[in-house]
Amino acid sequence: MSGLAYYPIHLDVSGKTCLVAGGGAVAARKVQTLLECGASVLVVSPWLCPALESLAGQNAILVRRRGYKKSDLKNVFLVIGATDDEAANAQISADARERNMLVNIVDRPAECSFIVPSVLRRKDLVITVSTGGKSPAFAKHLRKELEGRFGPEYGDFLELMGAIRARLLAQAHAPEEHKGLFERLIAGGLLEHIQNKDLEKADALLYAVLGTGFTVRDLMPEWICGP
Image (cartoon, rainbow, N blue to C red; front, side):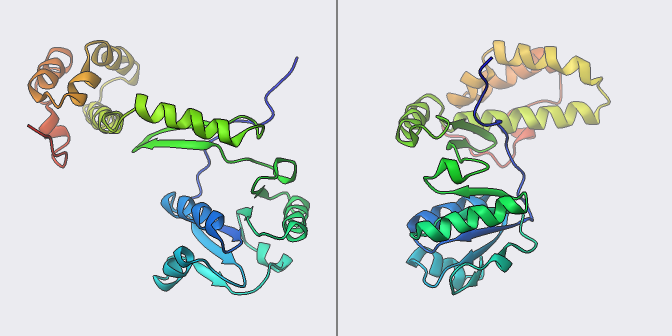
């Protein structure tokens, strides 16, 4: 039986030190994503592109302005090699694998213990596309198609569903009761009402399924709705 080349996983890097070796535009994109996920980022490179210089100037990243050394792996959770030196990238991979560390070498799947998929984010909704390293360009193409299918309303919808779940749990509802309630909200068109910013219909559905005390404005007071 054939299996997947990679085990699909969403990794929590919040508060963890992640090493990015390289100072170019590709490294900058990797750094930005790690920062958005709450990681503490160490960049090792003799030079930095403007984007990384800006982050360094804001003290958003720690920088060692030199080439990679094996000692840079100390106390690191995850490693990304994005230098323009193939020999250096291969050494980074070998050193990390020797220590059983998570390592990704950009555009070199054979040197990786994990690969980074193409990612579509709508707040808490995260959709990833991977081709197993066979064609990153096609993964990017598919992601762009998905961008048109899944708009920002999906993020707002998930925020609302999360707020509903938190309130139900606070009211000591049995967790097994939630599934049916959420399925009724979805089947009743709550997503479409959020997409259309139709608070009246959304609130009517919330009342029909959940009863009093559940309105969009009450559950998401920070959400600014259009006319």
